[in-house]
Length: 340
Image (cartoon, rainbow, N blue to C red):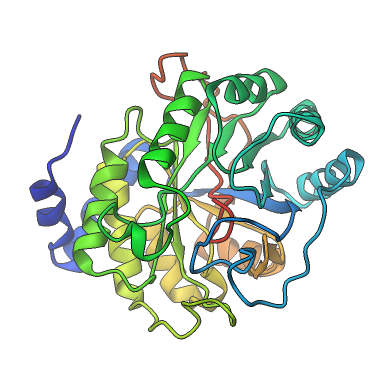
């Protein structure tokens, strides 16, 4: 089902509590509202990225104090994945600060990591930048569950944030992922200085992707010193919740994921976001290079709300090669705000 921009705008403009009620209704019709998918994100290659994303601490264009690191070894990554599994995560996400995937030993090593994570019974997700169709098929063969590639913002506002990669190139990567039969994790970052029309346009684009994303990360900008957006005004928290609710209604089957920025959001606001349809979070201390609530906070919050962690591959429906939808839980939002 396609949605017009007028339909999305009308939905976005509804009174907030009415919107949350409608989103909660859609959520309960399509998901167990007591469940939360727990995911862990690891930066397997940090810094030195040649993209000029104005929010990102890993860009070579931004003057941050982040130290560049080489690609991690496979056994080190798998050790982190085992620890994440023991801590309760069911999806393990690996992010590399690459503008695009290049064939060679580094990519072969990532495929080995994916196979290792999949073999231990976890869902494997990657965010590696732009991807060809052939590379997507190789990741699929290795056992990749989902590929994260965020649109970040609206097509209209995009060149105010990024100039080294076009919006169409992002859409092309998502198409390559779908052709390989991998589910897409695709969302955006709120609070980049965009206006309401940009948020409506982003949600319109996401909801009309074919197939719709299996996972939709709704990130809140974490301003980083040394980036052009370090002093941007923080987005009102109700706008963040409004976008979560609209995403849930427009993409009822998707996992709506809370990613970057959650550390600065009160537990009361997070609970309202869960009511509005968010049903996946990241656990652990860090999202690539930004801080994240620790696991104890997350499990305590879920316990207070009467929620439980979701099991991996709960629905277990494979994506068809033509991209005909997927029932696996997930989509990590691995890019958080830095890598995709």
